[in-house]
Length: 326
Ligand SMILES: Nc1nc2c(c(=O)[nH]1)N[C@H]1C(S)=C(S)[C@@H](COP(=O)(O)O)O[C@H]1N2
Ligand SMILES: [Mo]
Image 1 (cartoon, helix red, strand yellow):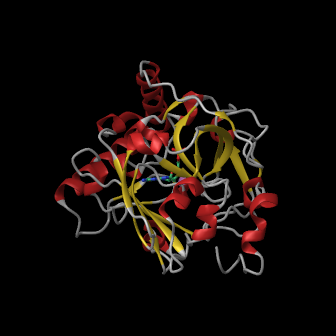
Image 2 (image 1 turned 90 degrees about the horizontal axis):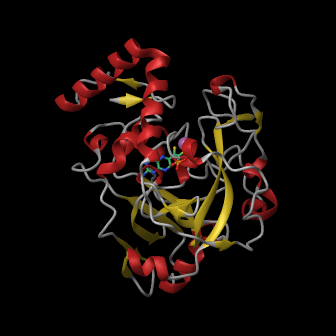
């Protein structure tokens, strides 16, 4: 089973498991039958369920990292928590909010290993206390062409990196996320090669804007947004921001990420937001802000180089051909 970047499931190959084939076909039939109205109703149902959620408060002091506070109005929380990409829970935007209640976020550990002098398995409570929580308002730009403005809570990934002391051989950082078929219904499918793996160059991971996030909107992360801990890399397309991380590996070679494995010609390792380099199937010049009304007819706005963070991160790529290193 494969889905395209618009979330439609195409049940094509014959080597899929019977269950995945059944679910894929059923979903597809539902989508065809229900059309846009069905999706809208599903989104409303998910919002309704969310309104009853009680999440623990997780405040953060306003970050002083340059570029960390975007002046744009944040996306309404109801949109940021009901329009998601988290393929472990389904490929529809409304699937994660509906399905991710099965995710067990405690106990939770994150193993930090590989080319480091001090490898360590961190318990979530240790990670929560590792460094003071900051609030940061970042734009998240999905490769599909939509964007949100989200007040995250967390601290710089650099805080964790300095505690494990990378060796001279550490050139890249690999982020491995949970792949539990018991709690994640789509991990049995072939939508992606699980676990969802992402990666950064070490200097990108060490950049102060690279955020290890534990919360949003002053509360702990809702499951569908990547609880209990995720990455947020604001100058890269949203898929670099791996959710529900369980392992962080420091390595010498460029990691093969889940999206590179799925379609290397479409999703490169760097995936810096770049309005001048189009995706092979669509333009990246503009984006649709979610939550400003108008649905799919909402007014699009220009996408900015490095998602607006060029002043802070442009120098990381001096001399790199960004059309080749997409
Ligand atoms: N583990 C995991 N992380 C993931 C994804 C995913 O499918 N699985 N989707 C990515 C994509 S494509 C985007 S746009 C963002 C969406 O984050 P949000 O739902 O919190 O806005 O999460 C990213 N992280
Ligand atoms: Mo995305």
